[in-house]
Length: 249
Image (cartoon, rainbow, N blue to C red):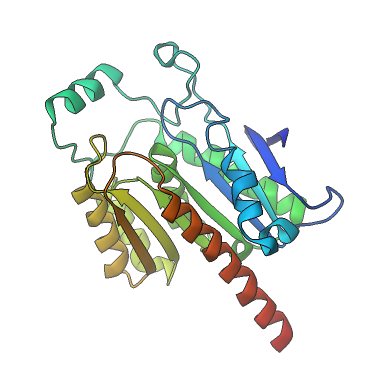
């Protein structure tokens, strides 16, 4: 693992292939609100070792969110949240309906993450169709927003415990995006981002005829092992599809 500045963000880069070799697939995964920039990095070696093809072909990049609010004590954020309000909502069991929210700071975070994507393309020469976006919680919301707004659709989008934001904009963008491949997982008893709201996002994708897969699990706000394994399989499927196309061309 190495720390590298890509675009506007510090990123941790994990790969098994030699640095002189270009990857066949790049995966960009964004951590959630309040987590350190290293939070998802341990998933890198786990994914690369899960399937031999990934270790031989794939680079994983873990951007660090740009904001470091003092109330997070070393944790980082893609955009600000009212932490006390969030904690009260969790304690009271309030349903957090964010479908019409357009968070202040989302557009700035989007621009920074797009700068990472562009830097990766410049380094590797890969098209967007060979770049996978994904993340957990707030990071999943950000990568969803970016995946819908890029000039071309990425190879796939992975949403671990995300939710629906900006419904008016996302619905319009999704209708024009084409059959984006999406893997989404969510806990049935998530106290932070309700399961029902995750199904709203799933249904929005279905309405736009995305190639979606939804994993529900009997848990809380986390990434279950089954979702991680399925993600590894999805990455292998993307590599196999590329190999078939190369053979046919």
